[in-house]
Amino acid sequence: MKRTLFLILMAITFTNAFSQERFTIICDSWPPYQIEEDGFVTGFSTEVVRAVLDKLKQPYETIVSYPWKRALTMIETNNAHGLFSANYTEDRTKFAWYPSESLIDSPWVIFGKKNSTYTGFESLKGKRIGTVRGYSYTAEFLNYINENCIVDEASDDETNFLKLDKGRIDFTVGDYGNGITIIKSAKYQDIKGFTDNPIKKDGLFLIFNKTKVNKEFVDKFSETLKDFKQTNMYKSLYNKYFSL
Image (cartoon, rainbow, N blue to C red; front, side, top):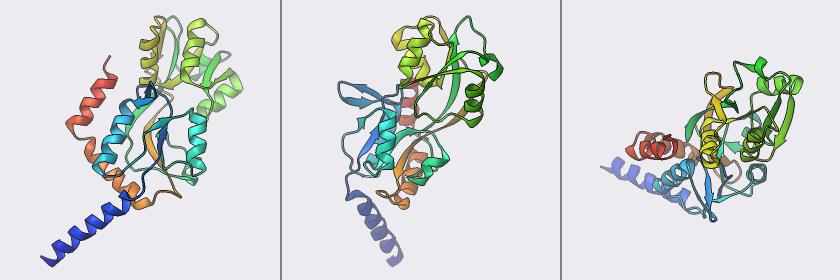
């Protein structure tokens, strides 16, 4: 009985320790994961993050989106507690905790015109490739396009898809869910994603600043997120944002 009471008191203390400071959680605008409409952020990752933080009873400020490069700088310079949706890169672990559980795992694929062909990196040789400044691609992919292609950097995916539609680049690369959302939203009729040969498949995470958030909270966040991903609510959110 005493042990049970002790564990209950410890759990209450543990929860309260994480609930004292209101977190600043930021993101970029990246449909369908983060969707900014009239100054309010929705989207798949946003709804998942809100649900898990609410389950942890962790207060947070209104989630605000910024251009990705600025958002990444904010988390690196201790100006935010958390940032989503971030891929894993070794350099970010210097200033950010990665939970053991991702918000979702997603493939990154090549997008091109429907009459184009992509069967691997060799298909890109000599072509104009659209990338986004600040995004994390694989070293293999970056090495290949820097040595064999014309690389055209943009500040966001929407710009690259517009360039692709207008014929100003030959291919772009991006997250498949984001790509099909852009294609549907802009009503591009002549663009497709080549899903047979993804350049990578990795998780999208809510990362936490190491100075502002302790590791114990990150571990608790991971556990709660893992449990949440088994619920009907998570499945419902997935169907809401990824059904064609």
